[in-house]
Length: 217
Image 1: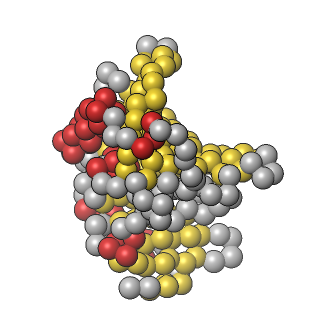
Image 2 (image 1 turned 90 degrees about the vertical axis):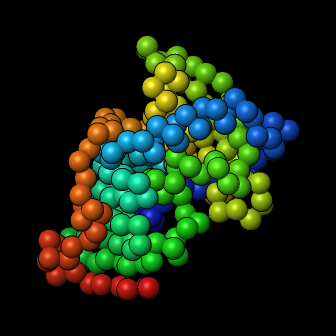
Image 3 (image 1 turned 135 degrees about the vertical axis):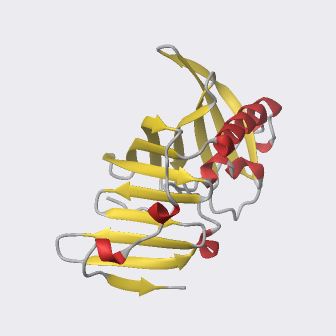
């Protein structure tokens, strides 16, 4: 399974088409609504499903995880991996049967990555966007929005966001890489009123026993 970096999230591919080169006001209205709602919440804690599909071998790999977000802080849990970001420092902890290690970076060194918190605001700088359309699943109306980078050297060329139209909630997103791979994330359960203390977003080595530390700051 491909290990995630501090991005949950993230990927690259080239886009064509006239519509992808514009800033659609209808899409902006949807994105603004989601961003404003996210900014107003106390804290978000959710479980999600994640998949990676590779067209080169036709395989799809699936995982599940948990995410907690508070402002620009986040704590991501995946099988064998946890990522902590307290807004200043990022700890990427990996555990297997044979070793435990944590890599430490400055949060500012990872500004070009798409993180669980920045996915709500990524459209605000450096991206065009368009509302592709709507579809109904049960009682939910889902709006699909495509983001494409304005510059060819942007780290993420294309992202799709799926929004609950009535609740203005981000429910899933997709990212495509330059190798023909597709990353998909979908929330399963979401608590937008979570009580999250600041220390929840900081790695505490005392809780994990003997850990190899790789400090890249």
